[in-house]
Amino acid sequence: MSTIWVILAILGFILLISIKQINQYQKGVKFTLGKYTGLMEPGWRIVLPIVQFYRKIDLRVKAVDVPDQEAITKDNISVGVNAVIYYKVQEANKAVLEVEDFFFAISQLAQTTMRNAVGQVDLDGLLSQRDRVSENIRSIIDKATDPWGIKVLNVELKDVILPEEMKRVIGKQAEAEREKRSLIIKAEGEVIAASNMTKAARTLSEAKGALHLRTLQSINDISSDKSNTIVFAIPLEVLRAFEKFGEKLPEENKNI
Image 1 (cartoon, rainbow, N blue to C red):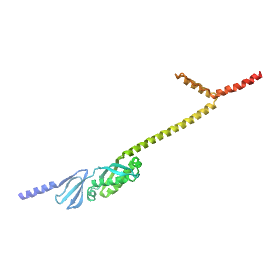
Image 2: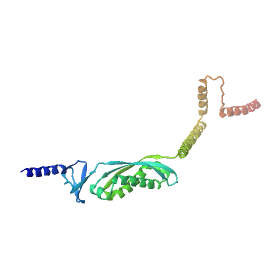
Image 3: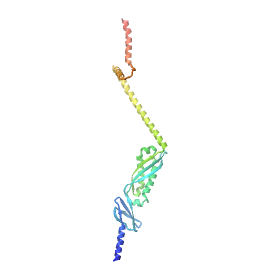
Image 4: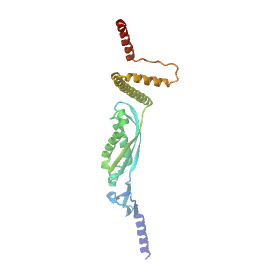
């Protein structure tokens, strides 16, 4: 009788240590006598000691922080870049059977791919089209990790570190570009102002009395100023009127 209780106790102990818990966000990869025998779904599962063993695989999205990498752009400028990669395991069995350490493998693959991708674009493209470069890196890594059962969701370039002399050059270039735009805008404004002045002069010359009204308006504007000196410009029309009046006087004297 005591022997039966001992056997039952041993079986109960073996059963207790054989119960393994797989969480909702995990899957278990089971091996029996060293051979892959299937996946373990979330919940309590039996794994016989000695004969079987298993490995839990987290199926949640994970992030790999790629450290700073020295790279040379297409136009031979040395830059430092770093990135973060978001991925998730889609097939737990492949992540265990096809690669030894998928986390380390993704990190190393990302470093190499990032240097190659930066070398395919020039500095301006790297700075202005960061999303396109990131997508290029993501597609390359995703294709390489597909046999491992891993899906790369996104790659984000965090920083592009430039040498100090290149920062100064870019600063000078940006300042020159701003000055160029300022001169262009000023020139365009002068062209518009000249065109408007031409139209105004044409209107004043064609309308009778318009120039005199404009002169009176100018006098009114000047009178509001506290300056003691007033320069009065006589319109050319007034001078011509005096000239014609002077020509008529001798003729009238002759008639007398």
